[in-house]
Amino acid sequence: MSELYLAGASIAVLILYYIYKSVLSSPSPSPSPTHKPMKICNIYIYPIKSLRATTLTTALATQHGFQHDRSFMLVQVLPDGTHKNMAVSRYPEMTRFFPTIDIDKGSIAITYRPVNPAQAPRTLEVPLEPATSDLERFDIAMHGSPTPAFKMPGQYSAWFTECFAYDVMLVYLGENRREVLFKDMVVKSAPTAITSLFKPNLPSNQRITFADCAPYLVVSATSLADVSSRLPPDQPMDVTKFRPNIVIAGAPSPWEEDFWRRIRIGGVEIVMMHNCVRCASVNIDYETGRPGTGESGAVLKKLQKDRRVDRGAKWSPVFGRYSFWGTAKSPSQVFAVGDEVRVVEVQKERSVFGKPILG
Picture 1 (cartoon, rainbow, N blue to C red):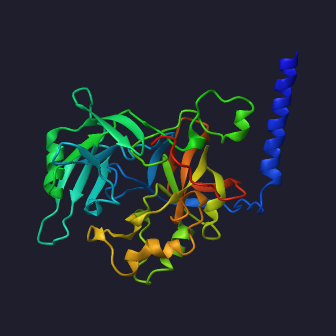
Picture 2: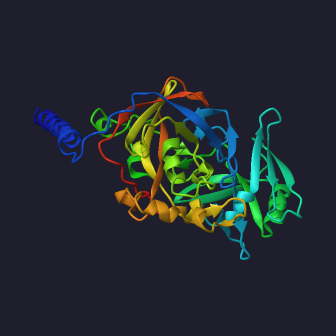
Picture 3: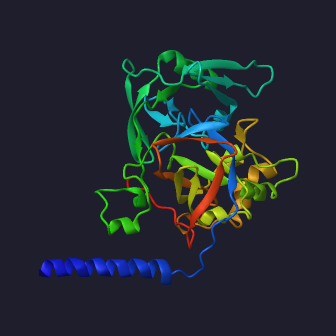
């Protein structure tokens, strides 16, 4: 009986603590949800991580992200035989590769466009979902979240090697997925009635592809316009430099997405868990495949003036929200440009970027 009493008392304390934290301890008022519905204005996927975006009008949304998003990646093969993951922040020349998807053919066409106009573009076709039974396993370690993957056949890596002029390997993820490493995303046991109070309404087995941190990156077109206003009129900010999956139009004011907690698109709730903190990759000149110069090469510095709003990454400006699949009527749903988006929950304070639980 005493054990039951103690358990009941513990539950009561937890509930009171939760109420205190959520109602009494907030130093700032809660923003109001956006009542006027917004719309999806752009959908992007990146079938090969860090190459140019592929623009879609519709995409199949799943718990792990959009279908075919970041299912391939490139690694540099170093002279000593070790490998280095390639990302646009360190390899700006990756911006000269343009992938398009042909669903009917089941392939990705990657066109390499050299900066030198005297050099002709060249194109490679890669199967969209290659069979893996005969492919050699290759282990990828990314941000402390490892996964098995597969080496693609040599002719594909040879093509990229010729384009980059150094040794490169194309790697395919297959059905493998990586662990999400935000501390508040790790579920070590089945949720209880009490722990569910402290957790967002998320499936317990969140896994991701070769995306850095989350299945979806959601940004606001209104905030993008604010960034463009800091640049010369003839140099508007290219939203794809922020590498979003979903761009939402119609937010009444810039940066209100900092406080969005849940949005609804059709029968799916997307839970916006963390800010996306930015690095010098936003300064890259996509036309030259090199670090940008002039005003467009100083975007990061311009954002640092007033967008260092995350206490967990105080030196990095914020643009966009790392987002996860929440409650849904089905395991997948087609999202389309023009779909209505509603904010169904806001949070009282900006989220704090969580450090990875590993590494």
